[in-house]
Image 1 (cartoon, rainbow over the protein chains, first blue to last red):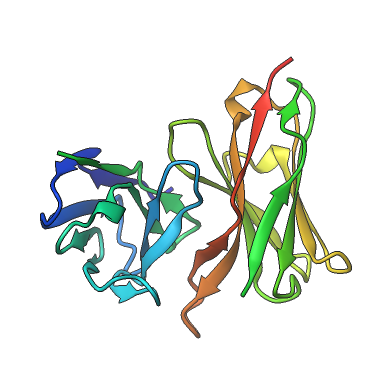
Image 2 (image 1 turned 120 degrees about the vertical axis):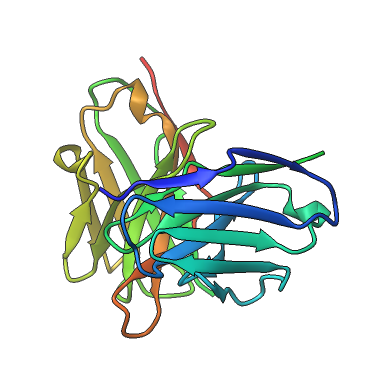
Length: 106
Length: 122
């Protein structure tokens, strides 16, 4: 099984802050990683796929990078709509999500 | 655009079988792979299993012995059954479509249904 470890679990930030979330895989997953945003009571929404490809319609303040075992999601300037929980998903072998990072208002 | 909607009982008794259906609109279930997920209250996401209209299926090794997926192309639906449920199976269950970069053979998921809460309780 490939395990995905996200950090931090919770992140307190203010509007306008630059925010970085990290996801580490227990073995190399090449670039087969996606990032999802989930708001309470809603389904996950894809933001980034193939580690760094921005999903159509997603604001350009979201970006992804990394390969192998370490990946990051960056929000360049946090907006009010961005307070949510973020999950990484590896799809190199079966599918495994990280445990999530909750972005809270500071 | 493709939309998915989960349906099924909101409560199941322990030791019984959980059954859910996902109805696809705006597209055909005869294209793509389709998956099921679950999310226990306040917790993270878990992939349960997938199905293709050809009958090809696979499921999470941690659940494999209890999970069955099927597809009904005439109704444009696919379904999930989980047998011998316990309180640990209480979760919001989601269905989703597979997506892939052409030629990669590696799929992520989009779009998703809105989810349906299933509570295991007597």
